[in-house]
Image 1 (cartoon, rainbow, N blue to C red):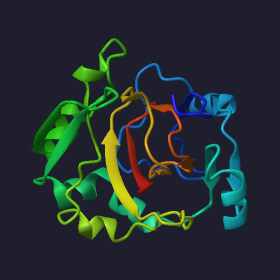
Image 2: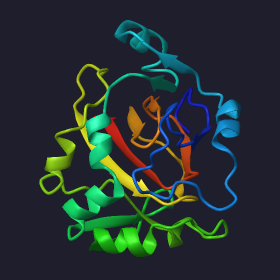
Image 3: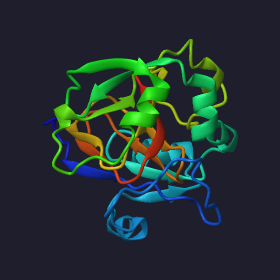
Length: 219
């Protein structure tokens, strides 16, 4: 474990903003999943709205994670990420799937439509990470550029770093066990939170619903 880092289980709880019941055509909640509100009430990660850059650097950037709310307006990007529109635009595109174990050893290439229609379903709780495939990272940025150009990343950056996107769609019950990497942001496209994670912060993720998300890594 990195010096000074504390293990933290980050539960990715994908809940819609108040008054918005659309899910973009994605079947959101897996069978038997607990209520999202109850999970949010147990989440110990601090939530901040209207955070200034100075506060971000002084209080979070190098020490602890934070959930950032009302940071950007990605309503246009969100609309383009509906199931119908992504299949229309990228159904024939080949995507690379990764296993859900810590180091994602196995990679599988197949058309995006095949992934959505045949593999994007709630995972069996007894399934092992190395038997679970889902789409995150490994994006062909030239092929998906028409989508990514509409994304507004979090406005905060760290000196000497550049941003790199990692876009993904995952079924309920999927995720990645404890791991760490460099700093960045993870935004839930069908949800209401942006999570910042510091450099080498140990964390794990669990998708309670079918989830569409994008991470901005600062490297």
